[in-house]
Length: 136
Image (cartoon, rainbow, N blue to C red; front, side, top):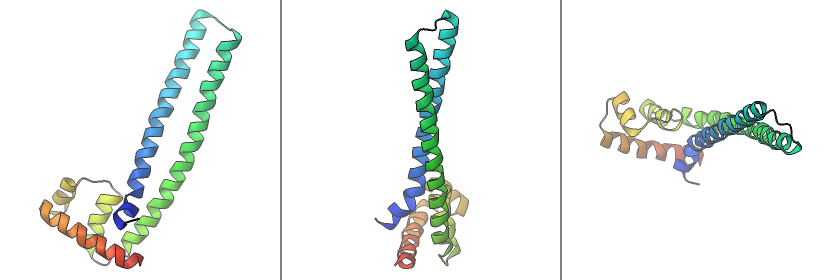
């Protein structure tokens, strides 16, 4: 794994958690619609309860899975934050924090740090080298 891949793990975990939250919301919405349609029809057939139970079960399972993902996210966040904190140069630390812990775009980082994009790219490459030295 490259240094960049290592640092990007937090952002990747964040994207996965967000996607699972969207799935949870979709399952919740479907379960609520199923309940309201069952109530409107006043239908209590044996199959309707199993569909609802299945939707609720999937919802609960996915919530438990997301809870584990969130714990792993925070563990990674702290670990990578500690690695970044070891970088001596303040500009390198700031850039790495903006990019890999705050998920800022290159343009946002350049504006925040008052550098051109070209300078940010150069600074980033230099910062990655410092991380590689610290991780060795």
